Image 1 (spheres, rainbow, N blue to C red):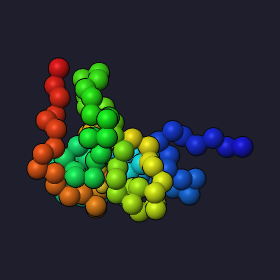
Image 2 (image 1 turned 90 degrees about the vertical axis):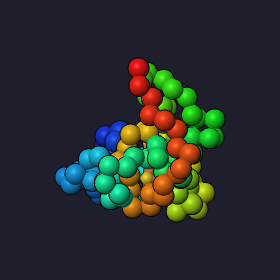
Image 3 (image 1 turned 30 degrees about the horizontal axis):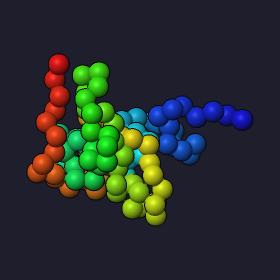
Image 4 (image 1 turned 45 degrees about the vertical axis):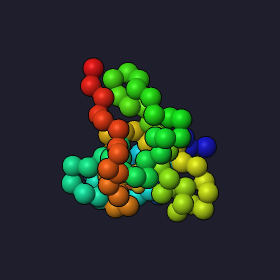
Amino acid sequence: MKLLDPKKISAKLTMTSQEQRLSHKGMAHFAGTGPNGRTCRECIHWDHFNGSYRKTDGRISKAPCKMFTELTRGTKGMPVPDDAMACRYFEFNSSAPEKYRR
Ligand code: SF4
């Protein structure tokens, strides 16, 4: 049995494009396909209110993407890092948590 790289989304993806390399498991679509410069932390679908909004190791801890769950009809995805580049489903969250700095 061939084990997948932890960042690899599917055996059919070859990680040759920039979007594939920057994407994380649990994202609704490929990273970098959303608004330029925006991150998952600023997206209304990034579920940091679900008990996972903590500051650890100089960063806001990862949180699941609600759009992933919606698109997969209820499958809870892997938590996504706060600084993942936004995907095409990005919607700006006016109350997004501040970026944490040490
Ligand atoms: S930009 Fe929003 S919809 Fe896309 S993966 Fe990040 S949290 Fe999910």
